[in-house]
Length: 526
View 1 (spheres, one colour):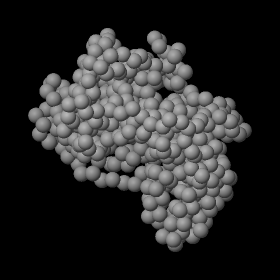
View 2: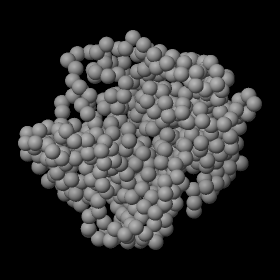
View 3: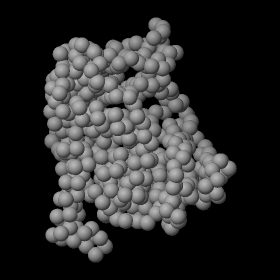
View 4: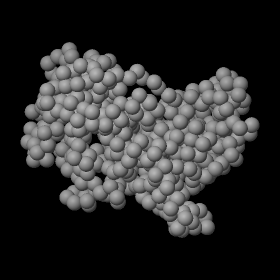
């Protein structure tokens, strides 16, 4: 069954529920679709004046710049409003847009997204704020009757991500997750080929993000909030704490109360590709188990999330390994050096079904990807190899703007047009949260003790990943004998409840749901 046929079948399930008990509406608030079901068609909403879709963009000090660029280039689309709680960023961007895009005219400027969502001249919102805002802003947009593009990761916790899905379904909104690889048709063709059985069964998967991350610095006390920033709005649902890092913007990724680390930042792209490749779009399931290990090495700074992180999952019997590295390949590191001056990242080394190694060449600054390993060969990106390394199938990259799929779905009111729908964004983000939660429930110990633990030694993929991590750290001057690593708890997930069960679950489930600061609270009933 292909993706579109599956969505149609899911819609039929929901239609049967509607026939039996009515539709989800204010007049019948108790009706809910089956937990996994996707609704193919959603509430009709007329687009703006003259048929144009009127777009507002929220947050553009980072990825939001790409949103502006994309929408500016689209026919039948007008950017009518911009929102950012940093007045300097807002005014500079709005002035530039008014100057460069004659269609935009004088866009309406907002500091508070709640006021923007009340604007009847806005049809859709495109969001790229810090992650603590993603789910709540998406829920509010749905409640305001607006379609939404929500950047990755779509949540800061598993519970709030599910609430965003519920809000989209309850209010009949089109909501897309910002997972850009889904807009690459050559990957869909490649993954269909890998699932077809022509190379035998899929035996394991390796995903990786090797991206150079420098120290964010070490402060000795609270830092001054930039005068242009409304810190209350910037903080939103999170705790309003003193600023304990040099830079307010971007480095929030590396502190737990505001970010989700590298696995949530870039790893969500590649773990989403894993789910896609394995066909988990059709099962709506999460991995059955996870165990993580790692730490923050090479410098002492105000970052809290690991810059070296491995998560090993059991996905319905298929082992999946995710590796993140922020330190370089280590070339040229002298004796006693803590970091290498090189920006070259490691080669990625994996294992074929035959036991032989395969290698993906590193490059300067960043390298990331997914390798799907089958009995008769493997694929990296959209290139398929046999077990001798011979290329047997290769498709050129055909990138499509993810915003194109979003606006196509806004017009068609069919979530099958999304790349991907928010349900898939939630599930892929939840896989990342599982890796972080395992680590947060872990124990600090020596590398030797961690590598000899039963949970690691009983999993050949965890053993191999631990060995690779130790070699990587040693190449960067990190003494394995003197190094402390956090060995995460081995946790078991129940996909139906989206909660952990069994050993360690009581503590792990503390992390399923965030606490929220009024009035920025994700509601139980959306």
